[in-house]
Amino acid sequence: MHRNFRKWIFYVFLCFGVLYVKLGALSSVVALGANIICNKIPGLAPRQRAICQSRPDAIIVIGEGAQMGLNECQYQFRFGRWNCSALGERTVFGQELRVGSREAAFTYAITAAGVAHAVTAACSQGNLSNCGCDREKQGYYNQAEGWKWGGCSADVRYGIDFSRRFVDAREIKKNARRLMNLHNNEAGRKVLQGRMRLECKCHGVSGSCTTRTCWTTLPQFREVGQLLKEKYNAAVQVEVVRASRLRQPTFLRVKQLRSYQKPMETDLVYIEKSPNYCEEDAATGSVGTRGRLCNRTSPGADGCDTMCCGRGYNTHQYTKVWQCNCKFHWCCFVRCNTCSERTEVFTCK
Ligand SMILES: *[C@@H]1O[C@H](CO)[C@@H](O)[C@H](O)[C@H]1NC(C)=O
Ligand SMILES: *[C@@H]1O[C@H](CO)[C@@H](O)[C@H](O)[C@H]1NC(C)=O
Ligand SMILES: *[C@@H]1O[C@H](CO)[C@@H](O)[C@H](O)[C@H]1NC(C)=O
Image (cartoon, rainbow, N blue to C red; front, side, top):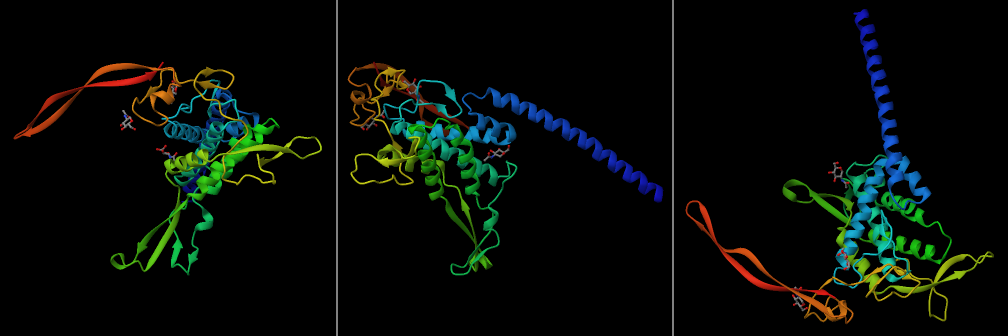
């Protein structure tokens, strides 16, 4: 018995030893991989590279969040002259717009919100170390409204904090554009935070709802995109105030107001007028509208007159063919007709 026990201890130590060596090797492999990956990602600021190396699990989620932001941007602006593309170096955050326009404001806000959203979602699903469900919202009983916190509340503050640390770290130049970008990043995150929802579930005999448990959930990202699009339409032009002794840009104020006023926290702000995005232009980053699809009869921004900036459009005719009038015959086959239609699409010259 005694000897058996000693043998057992020996094996346990042996196992742990092997495990320890393996874990050590694994973490150095992971670290090595992170080094290579983080150095390959274009356009990271030094502090972002450092975060990337220390949290290689998070960098994938950050990339997904930024991509979600870009996809949403492309969706929201699919009918505009500016379709969320820009000339220039590709980074994790897409191509940068050179001009401090309201379009730039939108891209910053949507990517900052995208990263916060993705990190929060990954935390809730247990995909990231160092975070999980919102611990503060556990066990607390709301007597007045008759429910208590339960389930997994999304820890949006963690996601927002992470987005702040990572996304904001790319603003290294001390200029007006930095203040603009930081403001818009924060506005995007504030909009996300404002759309957090409370979801509840009833408990009790046959759904009698004698007790309810509630938790907070993230909004659909589309909702954030729509709200930010409205903010884009109402974006506020600002100018910098150089208040410090070194005359560095210190804060932003609303332009063209006699009285001094700061923009609201959730306003999107811009410092320069937008170009018209008609022609390709390396100076502004505009890709132009050549080759864009347009709608000949639409009076809106996707109408060919507006979209093509008066250059005219090309007409492409093709025949669309599909299966139609399908009937089910007993038993067992389906017979269809072939339908076709001549269609035209228009692209800008
Ligand atoms: C969490 O990880 C699982 C498995 O890798 C993946 O399918 C899921 O999409 C991840 N969720 C988030 C929010 O990243
Ligand atoms: C935006 O428009 C440009 C120019 O026509 C085109 O090359 C690009 O593919 C478009 N991007 C998207 C996401 O539709
Ligand atoms: C073009 O615009 C018109 C008017 O807004 C709309 O009814 C039509 O569905 C549009 N066509 C396409 C192909 O989007």
